[in-house]
Image (cartoon, rainbow, N blue to C red; front, side, top):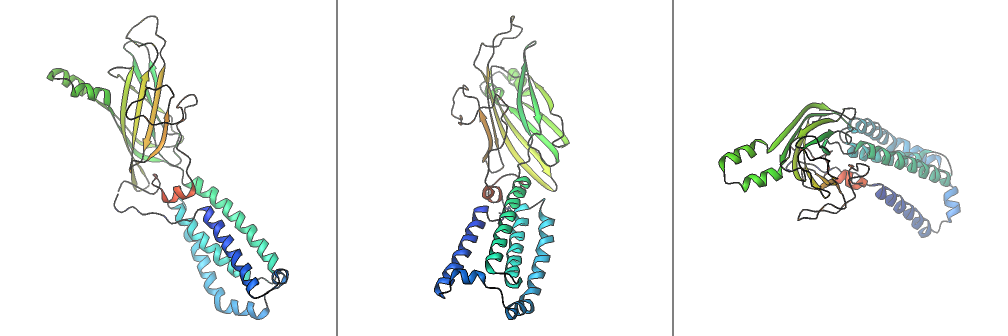
Length: 329
């Protein structure tokens, strides 16, 4: 994880807190100077003060605002939290300049700035949410084809992809087969098991418009399956890594090859996606899935195919270890 950098971006609550502290400072100043609040808010900046501000500070403020605005736009796609941190600083300089120059009563300037802050905060929050959505492919558990010996049909989905992902590679290990191979002493049988231990899927590019591609796999026992998926992909110049754990258990009638009539099967699923730091970003588990040592509570995977990342605050999006700003290298 060396070389990863945390992005500094105040949460919306911090902006509100700063505005409250600024208001308290003005109030305490008025009380200390024994200035009536009504009189203070009704006063306008004097011509002398406005001229002094223009001569001393306006050039510097204009330079900062004009520099930070375009800088934020250049970083919005790749570093949205940094972009909005520059825009917050630009907003502060602009607000100071507006307060010092505009010849309006203080209460008018105060209301105007609070309205501007509300609009700025609302659109800033919406922009950050839109630009810090998790971008990742994953392997959907899919369904069982009951014909013949029973084949499991997985689906590679890009439903949580907002930007194009390149060089997508999935290496899936059948853990049930791995356990059977470790307990098998016969060399020939171990060789056969080794040939059905892993499967791999690769795509040059996928996006939100990509169709889910199917992968057919013959598990050792369709009634009790467990898989570990290692996912690598690239966004822009950065490489990313994720792991996915899939558990599939039939709690209905046991499926047997070529059995007629087809038994009443009932598959319970668990899907867990972790980032490169090992933190869980997406998890669902059906309520009747048998509990084991690795069981984690969560909302059901079905009905509705609830394969969505956990909700995250702005603070988590900018400071937490998601995929956006923590590439593999």
